[in-house]
Amino acid sequence: MNNNPNDDSAHQSEPGGSRGIPAPEGPSNLIDTNYVIGQDNFATTKFGISVDIHGKVFTISSLTVLAFVIITLALQDYVEPIFNAGFTLLTVNLSWFFLLAANIFLLLAFVLIFTPMGRVRLGGAHAKPEFSYIGWFSMLFAAGMGIGLMFYGISEPLTHFGSAMGGITVENGVRTDWAPLGAAAGDPAAAASLSLSASIFHWGLHAWGVYAVVALALALFAFNKGLPLTMRSVFYPVLGKRIWGWPGHAIDILAVFATLFGLATSLGLGATQAAAGLEFLFGIPNTNVTMVVLIIGISLVALVSVVAGVEKGVQRLSQLNMVLAFLLLAFVIAVGPTLLIATGFFENLGSYLVNLPALSMPFGREDANFSQGWTTFYWAWWVSWAPFVSMFIARVSRGRTVREFLIAVLLVPSIITVLWMSALGGTAIDQVITDNYQGAMAAALELQMFEVFSQLPLSQITSFIGIVLVIVFFVTSSDSGSLVIDSITAGGKIDAPKPQRIFWALIEGAIAIALLLGGGLNALATAVIVTALPFTFVLLVACYGMVKGLCEEHRAVRLAETY
Image (cartoon, rainbow, N blue to C red):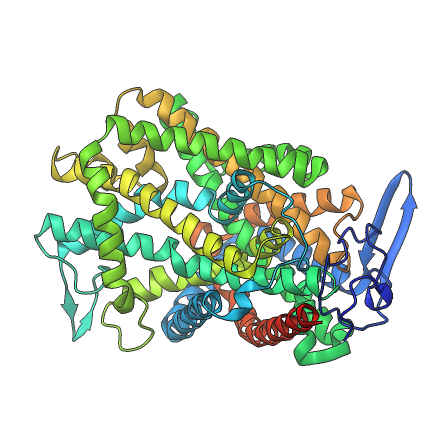
């Protein structure tokens, strides 16, 4: 180990060099290695196009994904039953594993907040944050949730409300309803409370617990230990210098697969909802052709942001997202059941905390359809997004202490989620209970948001803003993901040539198209769970590496302060 921040012998390249990651500022615990970032890369320029790629990781990842896209598009009628069967097989048999893993991530994050390791600063003891709190929070929220909250912010509470009101049904000794926990048959108030707490559960602390732990590990090993900003670096305490060989290649390839299919699921959901909104507002037919055109068009728009980079592209679009999202949220609060939303925020937060132990229980669940069909999908989705979101969060969080980082990443987005669900989901449920409006309940998931807006003033404007938000979230997800995947497949470089980012942005759109045409939403969900399964094991091992690295960093800083 090397505790001298001015000695770059342990660093892979000079600060400000091609890798773009500055050396730690102040006392740190750099890892001694002779590895030079990019030493296994293939770099060339032909016809004015530059590439700088890790040969093995890029080649295996890109060829495998391209083969998947081609086969899925060519054999659409054959792959759909396979996707459906795979979804059932994995959710029925492995639901407990995903729930248990998510609990471990969240508990670890909370424990670290209260330990002395919370004082460790990412980037070294003297590092300063690169972004303001507003800019930082905007990027956290836009990268981590995005399209999903637009798609499920109304449809999930409504769906759970209907299931809870229907009560428990049993056939041949097996519970067949989809209600969370014990349902709330015939009790609208209890059903509303249960449905909103279940929705918040899926989008709250557990989701951000996954992101927080993985992002912290990535930031620590990149900014404090001097390793590349890739998943393999987190495994140095476990694998040592073998992370530069095939074990490390396999970890990064799995990260690429998980990220691509997690992103494709979000892009597919976004295209589905945008197409439904365009039909609702303008009568444009909601067909596969419309969704494919949307994905292609928005992917091309995303390329502009990808080329612009984080500061000019991603940050500005993320801030635009936040402004539009909060304008929409404020409007719904103002013209909807304002008092109900205000009181509901605290009631739903309390209900969520009360139901949290039961909702997160991995074993002995009677509400199997809910826990397997809803929670398992979400937890797999968050794991598949973990490399992308966590690497992005890590990249923009240099200069924050571990405690500050974990509190912000866990609590700020979770509180916003409670407000979002209480406002939009609460308004939708109130329309059913108070106004007896059944239009949203009877509509398809992707249409429910527009049906709810149709009962509010200025419905055409709010619905249009909803479509714009979905599209802009689509763009930020695509360009953020492209930056991250490009870093992984470029051997850890974060300023690799722009044509590589363009390639991955196009690939994300192609996967979304293939999955939608090859099986619709079931195909999207299955792809997420299949790719998330092996990566969940990877992340659990990464937790050990992260804790060990934090302990060493804390000791190094304490030692430097002593002398």
